[in-house]
Length: 244
Length: 74
Ligand SMILES: Nc1nc2c(ncn2[C@@H]2O[C@H](COP(=O)(O)OP(=O)(O)O)[C@@H](O)[C@H]2O)c(=O)[nH]1
Ligand SMILES: [Mg+2]
Image (cartoon, rainbow over all chains, first blue to last red):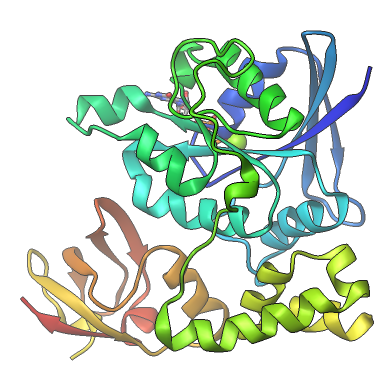
């Protein structure tokens, strides 16, 4: 039996703590991230014979190196390489929340998205095409209403399926019998990728290629992510490249 | 014209964000990008913060930050 490490990310007030509690119940442990006073909450659950450990990342709008919380979230993803990232998205503030989702996707770790606050979104008359979104983001999407405890079992199933790899499930709702509901788009068919357009791609692509051809760098960091961060003139990305 | 010139109830559109470093990044994270529409809810001279709505949610920012956001009135 293997322990599956899952990082839980999300913008503030997306319902991250609610979903975390829904999945883990009382099996939680609180410590600090190394060297700082930011709380690190971990929790466990068992599902179909697997032990899953959830690590609650600090709630942040973004993943730059400007604030301590963002650096902690980012360093965890970069250096601990969890098997899956569970991204809690506020369906009622989809546009802003996807900003973080894109950055998570660029780090190259398989994503499961909890489309939370679905009651609020529906109350506002929003209809979200989760099939389309799932296809674009290359991630399994599960609709949840954290406050009412809805979607927990589906999330556990999605996390296990994503961990096992191969393909992600399209859409959400009913339980997936070894991916019977899945349209079978394999991850090999394409990772999540934002097209930065004709002004930036001619700079990004050669940089990405150069980084991916360096064995020391490509073994440790996702080349696309590093290229984007270097283009943003991110201080931490400069440091990472300089260290090697 | 910059964002701090816009009166409560008025709408405007972002033309450019002239802020560097952490502040500029923070505003970008919150959705402040050229083309984005903003509606001012509260803006009193010398009283921080300015309250506004963009992309369907409320954001409060300082006058100092709003001065770095170039806008056009709608
Ligand atoms: N209506 C509604 N409220 C929710 C849902 N999930 C969480 N909440 C509420 O949203 C608030 C913020 O949730 P919390 O888990 O603390 O968010 P966090 O900042 O991301 O950890 C709390 O009052 C929750 O009860 C949901 O799906 N629907
Ligand atoms: Mg919380």
